[in-house]
Image 1 (tube, helix red, strand yellow):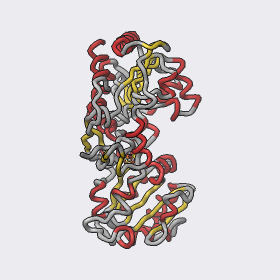
Image 2 (tube, helix red, strand yellow):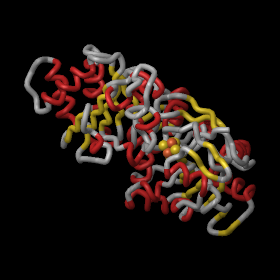
Image 3 (spheres, helix red, strand yellow):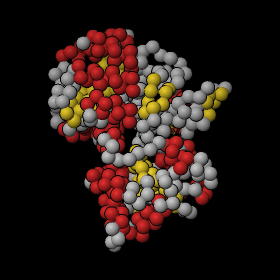
Image 4 (tube, protein in one colour):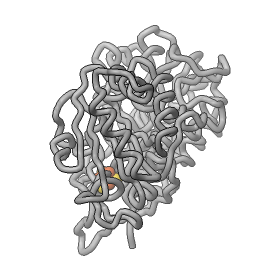
Length: 399
Ligand code: SF4
């Protein structure tokens, strides 16, 4: 039997456990399966251990009294739990946001609005020739991305794999580990301004001189050899680009030369699931206010905290104390904090209420959405009754 690794948005579905050994996973995936019983959260209210139902009841009472609640996270839980979290936010007239608001949410939104053409990772594996990792270093963030789906595998129409059938392009501000692979049949483009590279593609297509004319010209020529080329965009692209609209327009225009698709190279296992689930309900992928009936940059979790707009934060399966800047995370002290998480994370340690849940993909089944939009069914190793679904349903019933 194979399991799905919930370690990142690759959602590798070939993990096997044989005599206690984890097979096929990368180091991060292996740790998830080996250590899921460690550092578990305990139900707590104001620093005192309680039983799980008391913690849930206390959280429900806090939410009943709250005037302005934000629900944040859910990128590591299932689509089914995300649906309940969004329902809860609606019932509370609350704000809702996730990590994608400072990660790749706007790219997913452009895909869902059909502004950016996209494809599946299986199609990439079988057919892609030019593959551009732009501001992404999968060597660290998505360890099996290149070996399962892009550069290394021998695909149905790419039988000679990376030796002859792939053309790798890495765009980054430094020579990352992924960039070091760009040798034969490959190109590394060191940029200090991503917009200049976007501009260069436009200019070369118009026959004009440009800063990266040589590099853009080579890539456009290589693209003509294939009916499927792909850009994997990572965090470096998000933070390097000043004008997403121009990037989207560039991808469209490059499609006049040869077929080119975009796939986000994100990190959290089910971030795309959150984006898609919220988009289906509201037309926005993150930063949404049910009170105002719209999405807006002011409704980002970080802005809400910094501007003192919320009195209660429900944080589900994520750890803002570790991931956000100190001046933002420290604002959590000024609000009531309810953490729903399997692990005793740094955020759980500063929470008013901790509700321990199950590890999705190991102790709870359901669905997650891979970075390319494929829906992946999770298998369970050891079912736990108290999981995100149980907790969110109980809170909603109690309101
Ligand atoms: S690449 Fe991601 S999904 Fe695959 S085994 Fe590693 S952590 Fe798990």
